[in-house]
Length: 519
Image (cartoon, rainbow, N blue to C red):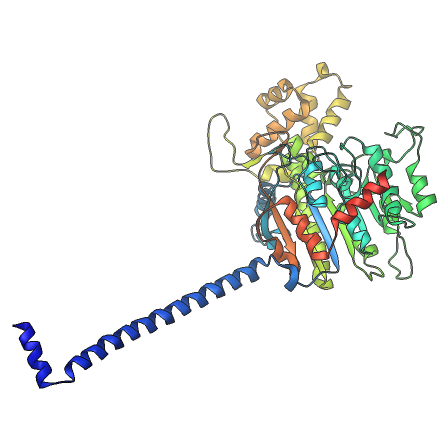
């Protein structure tokens, strides 16, 4: 019946069948057109998302302006919890102040810190990862996992005609500055490191001198063994060698540093500044008046001033806030707070220079975290959601300093230890109202200094999981057009690789040159 009815319609209207066919065809064309339009829209959307992502992450250096200067900063042992604690302590001291620290404005990424042979790196392998762009074994200074020499960013900068400098608050021969400026199989070879810092790069590049500026502690590794302060086994006087053979100006105190004037015509480079026999003082232990050692900020200020003078080809400056790490090893929260606070002050100065200069890349990293700091500690199996920063603000000396004062008072004989002696010295430096229970904790601890820190940490309610390093990721901070390269989570070696690629550093050729020079 339906078929007959359809035939009747066709007979009455010969266009019926053609119209129906055209309608079906038109609908198909419309569907196909819509499919094509939607597909093109989605494709365009995907392309735009990819382009936006690439612009944001900017892993290609071809579209990024190459900076003239590189300031590579390292907070040794500086983990994220340390920054949080320092910020909170500052904020709680004056709640009406800005609730951020200088570093907080420049957080751009994180980095993984494991070494070639351990999930927990040491400073030598951690710094070499940045300087040589490779993973190596713990203890290695400027050498790869096989113990073979590897060229560094600093040496590549010299090859490009850039001025170079290293600044630290440890001995300048310690792991981090050493990893940018020397090559030895183990970090303990500090006498060899010192000699390379004075002589190697001059030999490599056949120049009157190598590194333009060296400032930190470690004078004992530059003195001959005839000097009572020497830590060398030979009679080489590297200070005299640096002055006589390589033209270095030598300074050893704050007054001499400040006397280096800012006259554009005066050239104080190359400069060797060694301000302590071993490590420079903790910030918390500095004298209020007539301090002979400069701060990291004072050294950084002068380093940038001198390197930026007559600066045709740019400079590469490595700055280390070295002693954050040592506070972490001691589990000394007051010391750590002061070191991190000062590192933020240095960051603020450096960033202000970079903003004014408009042609400087600043990168700040850590080699690892030290101590395993946690904020909020369970005491006597009781948990409270709190930690008490007010105790830290009152403390005016490191536990190392307070311990030395106690030992002087008991003639280094722990049998002479008493509540009154310990209480009076701790009270003098801001640890108030010691209880008998706390005194017994200190007295019965294996190490007097560690016992003092345990009492303070219990009061503050912060915990440390170790007196060594931890394997957590560290924060990456940066400023400058090229800082977008360092966004996201990355291997520590990638940080150095990105600097090298950006600046056109050829580390392979530098490696060959170093190996030839050390033969």
